[in-house]
Length: 336
Image 1 (cartoon, rainbow, N blue to C red):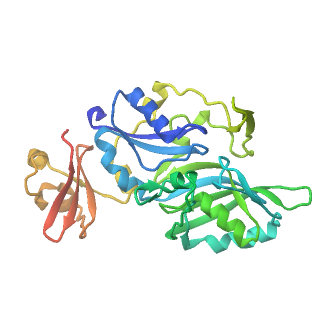
Image 2: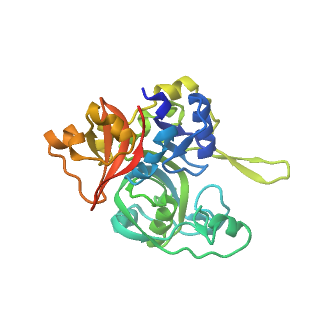
Image 3: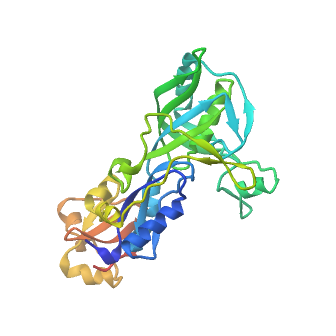
């Protein structure tokens, strides 16, 4: 394994922990100071974080551009200020029927415009929208183009009168999608309101939650996750979700991945295999020539302008290049 060059670490974040606390656990386990992410999760959510250590952090943009998959428990008839369990109740409404929900779901599949939640990390003139809201400011966030590839209705929990109180949904979507906004908009389409009761990310590109470090510590998501309230010292209510369980360093180490041609292919990156006689020229940044790569000569791999490719030598990742109108361009070089 390319220890000094870093790894890909699929990590199962637990509810109540920040994404950055999860990164700290990985830093300690791997004995490194440099760990990056490919997209964070809110504290109330759990599920897959794809973390990158050391020189693999440059892959963040490539991995984060891929499809994301989630499971969500939506509660209808109530809306909170943050559109999740952290906010205060600001609105109530009648519950939708199952047929109304089934008819509404297809309206949100495809390319749509979505307004992010006001409580979000999106910056307005250098300050997070959520921080401005907490300081009493009013914010107006512009709609953003996203794509919902699929929404599945897994199961529901009905109220006494047979209407839908909770719905468990699966969502496949593009980068930049807010599930909290999706639930808000889905509820509004049904002339009611709603918020995210629980959220779990299950996939990021080719990486899955089931193969992540700590997956077995997560609670069963097929049942509505339970929350309860406790009083703080000043009398305020705080939300607790479930007891956080310790993840061993050995478990994290057992789940780390090297960046391989197989992973590159799943990320829609072409792989180039460099000849040993040109490896030092590549590491020294000399002008790249097509005859350096056995794959270009023998397998007729073609690169198009702005397309990137991963470079490997004997199965080891050694850099990233792109094609420009003037030829090859170095993106990253990793000495092996």
